[in-house]
Amino acid sequence: VLIPQCFETLVDFCTGPCQENQALLGKRRILYRFINFFMDFHYDSKMFFTSIQLLLALIENNLHGEVVELMFEELDFKKLMLKIVEIYKKFIKRFKKEITHEKYLTPQQEDMVDAAFSAFVFISNLKMFHPNHPKLAFFDMELTR
Image (cartoon, rainbow, N blue to C red):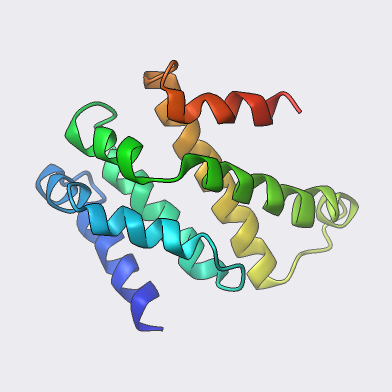
């Protein structure tokens, strides 16, 4: 419970944007290593969602520069994209009829869908400003499947 609350606080500190806080947190390699580590766990949708919200907050109004370069160095974008695809197959594709007929997913499933969508937005934003970055090449391959 404590770690998601800490991440939510970090999101609040960086949103606005607050460029000083974004630069301070965004230059911490350990933050990205923790996010990579956390993507291996499948049971905590809230933590995954909060991690993605933090990444979005860190690039808010700053898609160039040191923070983004450090993200490219430290984040496992392939793992992130595979997580998005996994969530799509498990929750969206599988429950498409339920979702479109206003039969709702469980709160945890909704969190996972929201997290996958936010992760997709995060990668899409980076791809828009860094279209030829090799770490994002996997993104194109997964979209064409």
